[in-house]
Length: 270
Ligand code: GLN
Image (cartoon, rainbow, N blue to C red; front, top):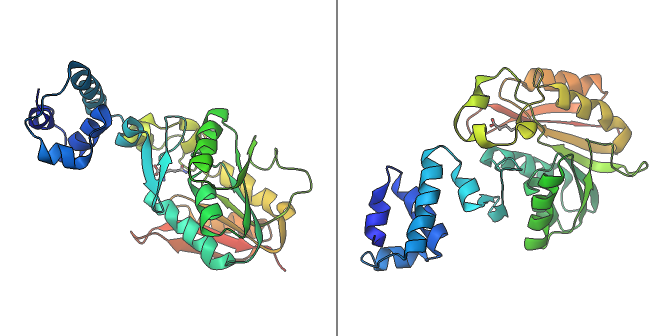
């Protein structure tokens, strides 16, 4: 099988065929374009077939490539972590805009691949960034990303605030927690089917993790400190209510590029 034949072999979008063939062969993009008649080795062909068949069965392209870009940087991903989403870049931007480039103590609760924590540590070198996840397998991925991208992040394994040092307080708490309700049919569709259920749903009404994070924030925020969370498009009102119930002020919801409620923030009185 030649490069050109391989790229036409499976009913996949051309871009996906190219990415999977590069992954299987290690060839650079220019080689695929410049040498369409080049014969693949038996091993290359088998590796490519394996990836193409998994893609045809629905596996996310990010897991097959082992990588997804977030905020302009490549992050390792595996089925142990949620695939970073472009919407989540709004959370990063809100954090950078509200805190600014001053020394700050920051924690990311439920860090998954580490996309948010690593990005913040690199975009705001003055910040001291910690990250928490309950999943040891996710932390393996997050630590690898921090090392790969040379981001100084301190990791803790456990549930939300529990593993943090007892006296640790922060200028900023960020989180993209599992917020899909257990009954949401979205969980049975597309890429999401292959992502860790633990990272997607609270197995409840979608608000239980957001509730726990909001309720615990005042004890962990410095005066004037911010809590910022990502949530579902229909959860803005409910999350603002949780923030207010926790005593936070300046509560506000920001929309994503699609104009949907996506990030809510609030502040401990200073
Ligand atoms: N935004 C993701 C989705 O809709 C969900 C991420 C999350 O639950 N934190 O697939």
